[in-house]
Length: 183
Image (cartoon, rainbow, N blue to C red):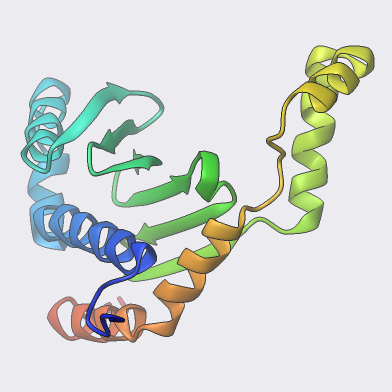
């Protein structure tokens, strides 16, 4: 018998992403971020490492910002870019979710979902060709079945996240808690 209450893979992944996003943003809200930005570099790193690890994050490393992923979401890479008065949280799809991107910017207090467009796909392909050469690219292209294109799973997940009222509800609720003040 067909189970009407069974969640789809995309609903489950979407909920996992939303949960991780909310936990990170909750710990780095505007007030907490002010305190965080006053910490020493070592204390900032320790704070973020503890935050990521408390959410079962793996491979925590400092890049230009911070990069990590989660055991229950191995098909996504997280990046947290921190500047003096702001931060950006970015989630990139990998492998079967290639082309999916979700990001949050503290100063704008809103999530943005995007999929790679055909121009970006072509640009990635051209960059890869320049990197390895045309002949090698042709061979690799014949051997591998993966491409630079946006995957069907990324498109379905994007649709699932947009079809919910999550983005609007979150933005509205966050704006009420942390109104953007014009000075």
